[in-house]
Image (tube, rainbow, N blue to C red; front, side, top):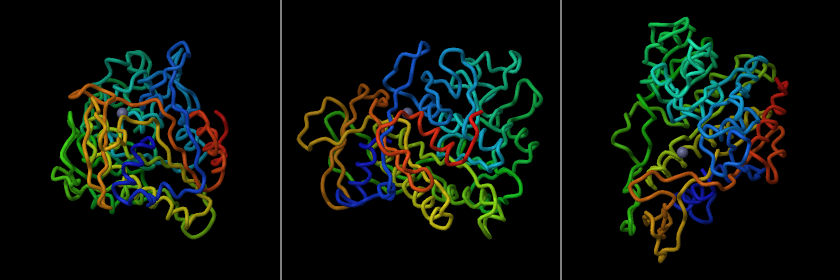
Length: 400
Ligand SMILES: [Zn+2]
């Protein structure tokens, strides 16, 4: 979610002079997003695994790796692990599979992001139980036992564990044995109680997106309006805003509800399919997900209004392929023209991959916006790894 994606959503929904909720945070800085190769040389375009590892652990790593060092492949302690160790409640909410790179960077350490479930371990021989590892991302996540896990990826959690203490049972069985309440939809989420951890699996793979429309095409599409609906999204699927609100409620201890006591919590909320839809040059999907994420930001800010000691940070791991083009641009890539809510035409182009192939991330810096304790530390231009120190300072966490 680079500034292009934020600006496209702003132009479409609230107009060029309007402001999204995420535009209203008082402190805004810039986060530099490069990754590294195994020798420590820069890799100027990050993927989500290295991008999330950077702020989750304070260390840059190689693309594809999840919270392990670039050279020796050693595990790096994550913010969620450190917070949990010091008595904070912890949560991880996403519209992707819960085993996808961004949520995984807080809850697992694997050589390659592809190692989501026990059946996916080909790229991670060192992480298998037989080699002394702790298994797949799903197994490690459940074993860590964060208080709230909400997202997609039910198919991964249904996989059979092949080795280790839960051999022969599914990862879901492992979660239930660990005390998790497992919920599948909005109704289930409403019945979840804060006395036991909650695992919400709202889709077999990624949670279906909110908006649909024509993809960008070679030579451009006719002017279009987005459809603010997705017929393949089940009606009982919670929105990211609903999941964020539920997580905030579950993570707020009863003592905190009535006063300032209580330790507090660490929570990540990811609008994952902004990126996924940009990869497919799907402007309406991308804008709909950006606006859905913005409503989750509004839920966080409303919570912070009632709990002023809350630090809220809005950022991204990398920019993406979409560009806002002049209407007359003769782009060699894919493009579309959208008719915005304020009635103007906006041309979006995608040219970081060949037509018909995946569109790629870009190496631009991304926004990091914040309010609350330590928020001033995001001002200026910083490496993405520095957000780790800001969040650790706000939580008062020790280094290891
Ligand atoms: Zn991506």
